[in-house]
Image 1 (cartoon, rainbow, N blue to C red):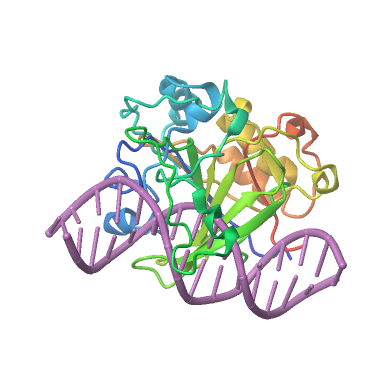
Image 2 (cartoon, rainbow, N blue to C red):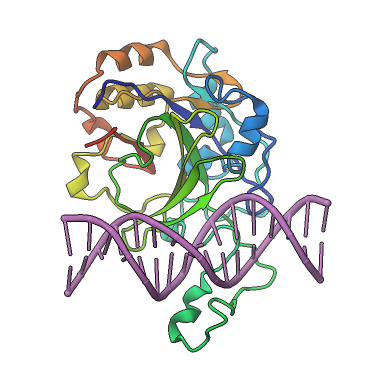
Length: 296
DNA sequence: CGTATTTGACCCGCGC
DNA sequence: GCGCGGGTCAAATACG
């Protein structure tokens, strides 16, 4: 099971002023190791992500994140952070998770409302979701997103939460499909996308959208791989978390430009290669994302 | 039998 | 205006 370490690349995100995600161009510098080329990152990934900071601290805190993440000098690191701290969208503010995440993720992505229920009646054979209760002018804002890459053989990483797959789509320029998951907890609209890098099949890219407004299901707590709290997300803690959880993962955060991956992480990481359930520290705050183990 | 996954259709925004 | 790419729904199916 844990013979082969997984590497996790961490990626920050930003808001895309566009809507459905198309504004790449931001990351050319990310992913150093396997992903390699800029062009690839541009196409392979999905869209810009909102700043993780947003997730953590609310709007306007990009710097904080940057501070938390990127201030370390690039070492050979495995973790890179890329922060484009720039775009903070103008109109969006949205609820930024921190405060009103009451419905985190309740909305859809590209402004597509889920009117879909139309088909229920069954009367219409032609129009399934024809009617669109869409509000004019109101653009749906997407939840803050946070993505990271993990070197793993399994696509869906165990993160302590329960997810239900609701879709799968082929990714352009990639032979691997992208899977869409939604948190099964009622009221929690957190979504997550999982796809494999077409450049390096061993790398899985997971993108979380929104924040959980509930705790990790007790039943799964024990299994949760590593839990990171947004509020605690600092390189140190991440390291601790990763190491502490005993999961052979490596994070690669992409942030403004610096690698922020302490060597310590490396060492600890390799050390606890096996099982060291000691993540209690982070357990409380559970968060919005976690990484999991390879296979139960 | 209840729940989760699969899968094709549909919707939406954007670029051309 | 049309086509493309991405995201979501829901009926059908698989699985426990």
